Amino acid sequence: MNTNASPPEILAFGEAMALFVAETTGALADVECFRRGIAGADTNVAIGLARLGFRVGWLSRVGLDGFGTYLRQALESEGLDCRYMRQDPDHATGLVFKERAEGGADPKVAYFRRGSAASHLMPADAAQVDFVAARHLHATGIPPALSDSCRELTWHMLDQAHAHGASLSFDPNLRPSLWPSENAMRETLNAMAAKADWVLPGLAEGRLLTGLDTPRDIAAFYLERGARAVFLKLGPEGAYYRGVLGGREAEATVPGFPVTHVVDTVGAGDGFAVGVISALLDGLSPQAAARRGNLIGAEAVQVQGDMEGLPSRTRLTELERNLPDLP
Image (cartoon, rainbow, N blue to C red; front, side, top):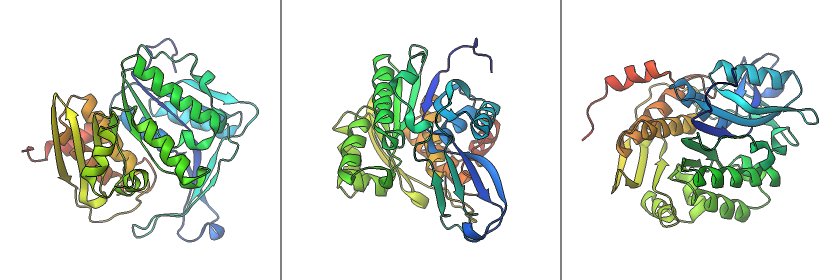
């Protein structure tokens, strides 16, 4: 990586983990061979945006170990700018093991991330970040769940990006088991979402965080607190958006794309985020953004792996070329 290159236009941060996916179906206890890859919702989105041609900077820590070296090499090979990623000599890289997906069911996952290098991230890790050059920041609810210092970093990133005029997207990406209480999770993530321009919860997440039921009411909850637009993931049914984009208020439900054979659902929500964020950065309408989110989410579930189905710009152009005009 050439650190003399222009600073990244998009910033993402969080924990990248070395992923080991079972080569055969069945319980992890019975699997002998695994395929190595990259895991992490934040990295999935960063990689997806980089594949579409955006200059994405990745801020994180990994261990001073072989897994950390692998992650840096793998992320840089995907086009990420890793100038803000450092190796921590005192803490190990997080690991995750995943069953091989079968029949579209959610595969079981085992995490080994407690006390990981990334869980020790803090605001000082962002001291060299060029926020002036940043056009957009993507954040999720995972880093603030990892530790107090990660939570402080998340607030710092949100505040600095906002102060320097960057747009912000926020995906709650709930991990209840990492929080001390559901109430702490709800209060923290709702406050962070209120800082964002674009909020991207799933329907179940929105219901848990707001206590409200309908997509329209959930969207209103965040719009009333400062968000500009809310894109709700509805699974196979598609997506709902509501907000003020392009100077006018709009709302609509955008149908999903039928998938004949679902292989692995992990990463579908991250694919949706890649679609929405890239479309809005491309200057498209919120309806087109929701449709692109649905399209990339549908691509993601048709292959094994967390981010293997995220398309290149050429592939995305081919997919969108065959779509009917929006009303």
